[in-house]
Length: 423
Image (cartoon, rainbow, N blue to C red; front, side, top):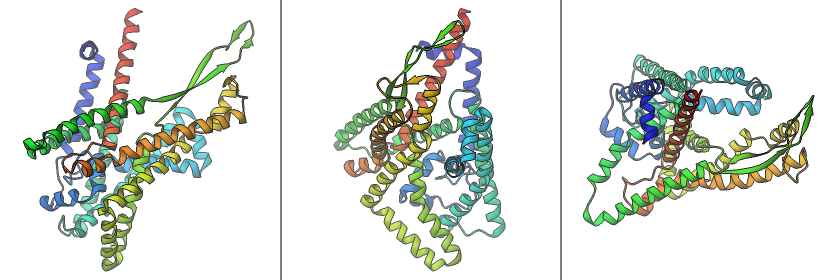
């Protein structure tokens, strides 16, 4: 409580928080303004029958279910960043620029991601509007109406990207993540109201079990998200001039969940791909496109098959993304150059092999954890048989991760100001 009060006693920190809250309020306001010609009843029915778009609605902060001006949310920007990450594998020069040029390389990488966001937003908005027209959620649009809607929706995504980067500049967490966090939290009052509306005295044990299970899951997600394997590292003593350096012991932290929520986003993108293909096909052959779309719908409505596929994809993408972002050979090389070594292990290739084995072991646990978290909403609805009950899964993982990150950033700023006061 004392730390919470300190936040508002420090003028600079208070100003940052108030500006971030103001920017988030603009985001929430834009998420409530719908595009014209929306059938609210059909829209609600469409989202209740489609789990994938329900997930995407989380990332848009509820803007997708309202068909708002920012219905795509920060989805195109996230997709652009994922594509850029994948391109670093294909083009070694891009990887070298990102990792080798420091802050300048990362700034260039982010600039390319922004450029890529615009065409992705155009494609996604056009495809999604066509999907809604085929499902009769919105009326058919003329060419001018389609173009104007695509431009407005694309502009909305660009505005949210800009707001997210403004929030990041205040160094209290990643702006994009905070916006997704705000969108998820904004849905809580409606979820609670829906659950209370269906309450009966006979369901009291189910409600109590749900609350207890939610607390256990939140504690588990927090524990795993913060969990790490500490690899001991020693540094050899080095004499430079008249001074001796090194000779200290440290450790190399390897997080259990190194991939974060990215594998879940990858898996959702793959699951959405058949529906996207069906929309492209329908532009050339409406009959075949409708048949293909019906086939995809049958697949998604099969809870067991859909849940199993989703789980397997998340596990596979966790291994893939960890392999992309963590290079044991590079870590081993950096340790050797700085005079560091793992006790009992020879520097070089032997260290690389040890790091690979350790990473594979902890990644298995992290991948299974992410897979279970991803399908958690499906499992809670199946076992509790209450449609309004769904422990958040990916949404819960995002909320916990962002809350912990913001808390750490605020604490670091408070500590910094305490040291400034001492001086």
